Length: 226
Ligand code: AMP
Figure 1 (tube, protein in one colour):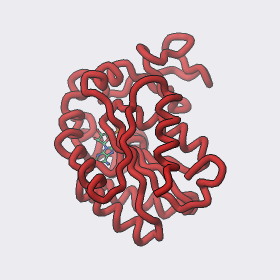
Figure 2 (cartoon, rainbow, N blue to C red):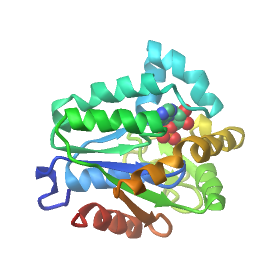
Figure 3 (tube, rainbow, N blue to C red):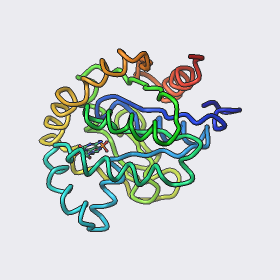
Figure 4 (cartoon, rainbow, N blue to C red):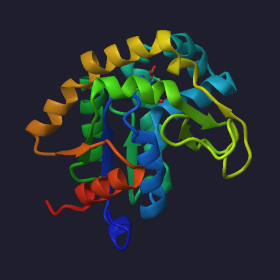
């Protein structure tokens, strides 16, 4: 997948990394540049909560504790989304897979869908930097753009630069919930680094510094011939 020709390839790209590593910011940017959809399971689940669907009702207390939603529910939701025609040419996955059964489920979905092996971008950040990023994260209630009050503040406090929407802090970015979320990552998701590395699919990217610097590194990793 690259800016000029990438969307002609049926490429799945997985963003793997802890909460607060900048996956969502980079996924939005890459999706814009490459013209492929970006699927965030966290965003989809939050939308289910807003719509008060059966899945939303089930997921809400789990997410508010900082735990992971059961694999079979997440896999079903992802399978439905990936069957949409706009996903045919390729897509970016942010926050999925998060467990080994999800990764194995995704392998099956990609095979059935006629996709090749995914590229897995591993966002590497020191744990102590994550706490600051999560505590400072704010999201526009209108367009979903994310800011960081420490590193990338909006021009006017609590107001989105793009559309004037109010910024909010995610409930699960609060201090009490960040701990369990990071625990869930290191226990259940980090083993996927070895899973994908052993399959020769992993690209390590240092997710530190300016957003543009990381975007450049991610683009290079996605486009590297393999
Ligand atoms: P995120 O927006 O990716 O940080 O996800 C927010 C929350 O949604 C997580 O803490 C989980 O509770 C839930 N969630 C998102 N994606 C998944 C997934 N792939 N598997 C299980 N739970 C998920």
